[in-house]
Image 1 (cartoon, rainbow, N blue to C red):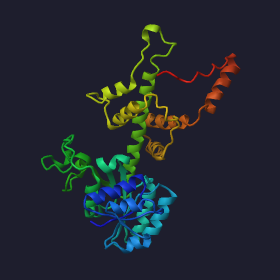
Image 2 (image 1 turned 60 degrees about the vertical axis):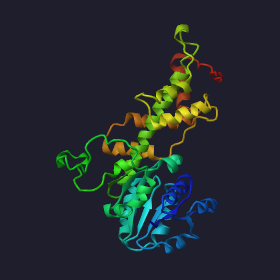
Image 3 (image 1 turned 30 degrees about the vertical axis):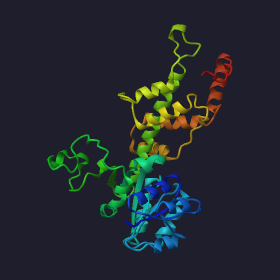
Image 4 (image 1 turned 135 degrees about the vertical axis):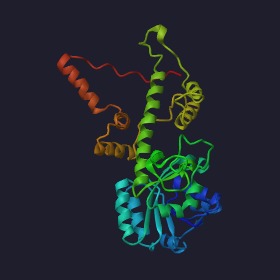
Length: 348
């Protein structure tokens, strides 16, 4: 199936490769030409401009944007959308805020152009593992582009569904999952899902990333406690010199806390047990903040997800001002002196 792809970074480039390998060589464009030579050797067709990209696609066209959220994507939606015709589809696979999707879909719909927001998870591993796709927009357009989603998604991994599906005819409508009664395939077991109208795909991906923040923070804190189990201020009989890499490897086998994130943590600890190659200053790409904002708008408690986001903020300040104020207050009301800064950790 023919599709255009604009944005060939770490994810966009690998998505183009995966499409080419699965029989859908994409027509691609990028602001900078560096990815062109390698992708051309792997089957992608290189466009010379946005105009050329659109002109060489047969209607009804489909152009997939894989760009950083914000102004870059906004400009690309304007540039590509202005060149599309009624019946064409524009897809955004970046981490766009779902409210922007709703606005863009309405604007493009006035010209007869369809808009799909596609929350895309898989990172740099997606080329081999496939991408989990969370899709918002018109169902008919999703159905038309099914060959593309099937090529990008992981496919059937042999994982049995957790329960009766939304299209399981053996279940009465009232008990079908998600309240969906329309006939059709269970695409979620293949790794992609039409989540709802415009914005729904990126909303689901936003919460997905918020949960990711919480899971990662839980692993980080747990392993930090393990790392300090041999601290000298603990009773001598209660100090443990633990092999974190071995524990991570152990937990991958039969443990209830096993996960792909734990697999990745085990790999990093095996390569660098003290993680000396990292500073510990952790950025956030926006979805964690948006998740907390959504929780506030819905009046839903999200203590863990909010705390995980705030932990990232704290990680960027080696001597946070809040900590300095706490020390100042302790000195002011009780004459308490600050403890000397600990020596750098040199334990193996």
